[in-house]
Amino acid sequence: MTKEIKKIDPGQWAQLLLHWFYANRRDLPWRTVPRDPYKVWVSEIMLQQTKVEAVRPYYESWMDRFPTVQALAAASEDDVLRQWQGLGYYSRARNLHDAVCEVQREYGGKVPDTLAGMRSLKGVGDYTAGAVLSIAYKKPVPAVDGNVLRIFARLYVIEDNILSAKVKKSVTALAAEQVPPDAPGDFNEALMDLGATVCIPKHPRCDACPLQKRCGARALGKETELPVRLTRKHVPVEEITVVAVAGGQRWLLHRRPSKGLLASMWEFPNAVGAGEAGLEAVQRLVQDLGLSVAIDDQPIGTLRHVFSHKIWQMTIYTAECTGGTLETKEDWQWLDRSCYTDVPWAGPHGKITAMV
DNA sequence: AAAACGGGGCA
DNA sequence: TGCCCAGTTTT
Image (cartoon, rainbow, N blue to C red; front, top):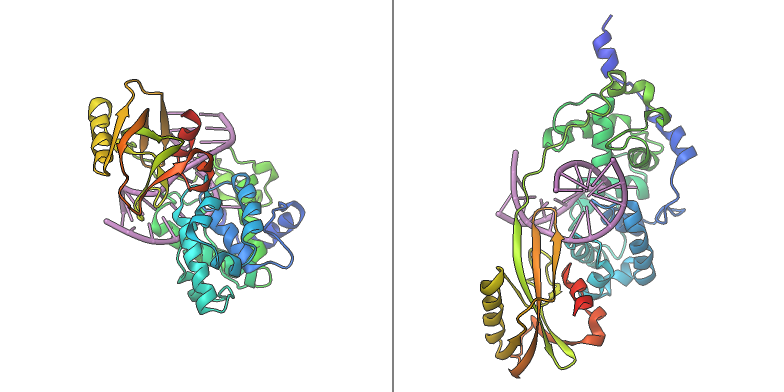
């Protein structure tokens, strides 16, 4: 008897999963009947690295504002960023806008129904292309995301780091073997739901799992040890000095560069550094604009903002503009206090409006 | 292969 | 605090 192999190979299990899905699937706003490729696409982009409950209100508001490819293609980038404000990973919004404009221009407004066509769009990787193709167009392709990697690592007892390219490749091959040709979208969504509600990271609810009898990790009592993930490195802390410069009823604002962290979003004048050095750096920044300012000695508060790869430790000061004229520049502006919702704020800078 | 890129929820 | 989440792009 080849007991070892039998334990690790769960065989064909797609039907078991589908039966569970049809009785337990979540009711989500983008799961319309029939499925709209644009809505599936937008939801998949919003859901990248983001929980369903965080996405829901953004998705609803987005569809009110940009219900179709045509509506989104006609919008300005600032409009798009404002709608995305607070959801994070802002390149997703810019890429989606770019990609939708291309679909409007090059595909007559119809979302591509081929893997190559989808994959060529900005912000669409292997996962999103597979999800849109299978869910909206019923193409029998896999869609491998974090949920699928976790589920497969347990089902097939994969002990390697699931974030490696090697594991992603082998899981993609295993998933492709399981995709039922008559219900590929249901299969892929079933994996999402199973991963989100049953085969969860910390303490999987194996008693509720339709695949418990097929699961290698379960059989070996290793369900809480898998999957293996790469440990994160230490994240550096960056000291930031922020100065809210008031000119009458207006604030002086700077637009961040078009590439990099919080690209193209608006912030209060600031510089890297703490204490005297930080204040002098901001003072120079403002002087170079042709303005003179009087900065208050005592900070009005501090703010700690955690990104996935760095931390901003911010100290906030207030200041009054005492003279000079702002040179005409694209990336600087005076904004009336009553208009603070009119700009896309660079992360924590939006919170500073409440402090000053 | 590793880093960059947000933000919120939970133990 | 540290981990995790329906990833993609850049280095």
